[in-house]
Amino acid sequence: MVNYIWVGLTMIGFIFAAVNGTMNEVNEAIFKGAKEAVTLCIGLISILVFWLGMMRIAEDSGLLKKLSSLFEPLVKRLFPEVPKNHPALGYILSNMIANMFGLGNAATPLGIKAMEQLKELNGGKTEASRSMVTFLAINTASITIIPTTVIAIRMNYHSKSPTEIVGPTLIATILSAIAAILIDRYFYYRRTRKG
Image 1 (cartoon, rainbow, N blue to C red):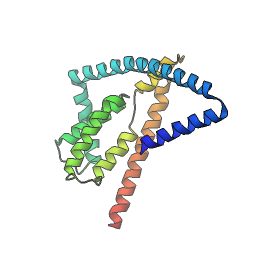
Image 2 (image 1 turned 60 degrees about the vertical axis):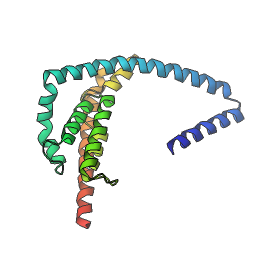
Image 3 (image 1 turned 90 degrees about the vertical axis):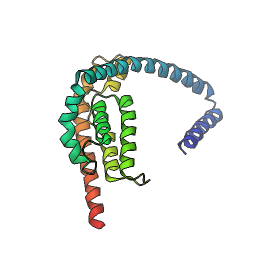
Image 4 (image 1 turned 30 degrees about the vertical axis):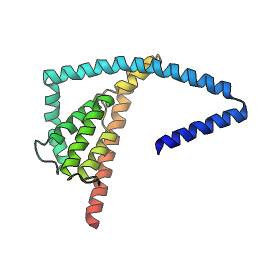
C-alpha cells in the first residue's frame, strides 16, 4: 500500500511540474538530492562502523553483559510474562543497549529477533501480546545516550558543535520512554479492567 502512495505522490509531482513548466527544477532537484544522499550515506557509514566497532569491543570486554545485568531487573518488571532466561529477554536487552548508543541499524535485527521470540511465546498468534506491545512502545521511544546518526549528519553538514545534541536528546528520549511506558500501562490496565 505504501508503495502505491509513493508512486502516486511522485506521479502527481511530475504532472504538477509539467503543467507549471518547472521540469528543469525537478530534474535539478533529483540529481542534487541523489548526490547529497550518496555523500550522506558515506559519512554515516564511517560513524556507524566506528560505533559498531565500539559495541563489539564492549561486547568482547564484557561491558554489554554488565549493562544487561544492570537493566535486567527493569526489563523483567516491564515484561512479566516472559520467563526467566528466555532468549527474548536477551534480545530485548541487546536491542535496548544498541538503541542507547544510537545504533538503530544494529538494534533493528535484535528487535526483529526479540519480536519473533515474543510471538513464539504468544503461541504464534497474529494478535500482539502485552509484551509485544510494550516492546514496540519502548523500542519506538528508546532512551538514547549517544545519538550517533544525528551526530554523523551534523558532522556531514559541518556543524560547529555536532555533539551539542547529546544533552537535549537524552532528556527528550528519557521523557518519551517514560511517556511510552505510562501510556502502555494505562491502556493495558484499562483493557484488563474491561475484560
